[in-house]
Image (tube, rainbow, N blue to C red; front, top):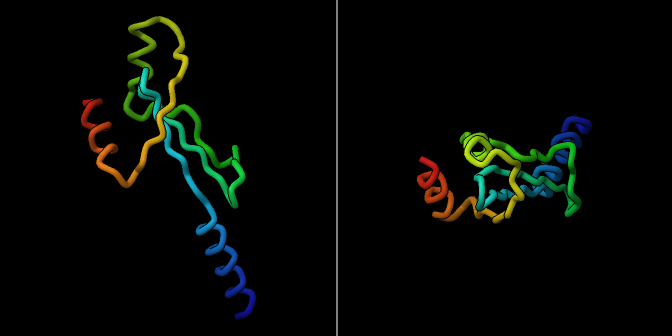
Length: 89
């Protein structure tokens, strides 16, 4: 019983100490999810250059080159997310 409680307590500490920074490129719309534990970036669990909406593929097709990303941090709890998704449609 003690071991199970310890495992759940460690998982709870890991979950509460993690943070995800969601960024999107203002030029092509590609997304970037940077995850950290205890304030340190962890590349193993971060997700880089996600083209969930197909905007980067379209941008690259239109411009014929790679994008020099101009990152904007997205506040996932604000109305900014809905406006961003609506602007892609």
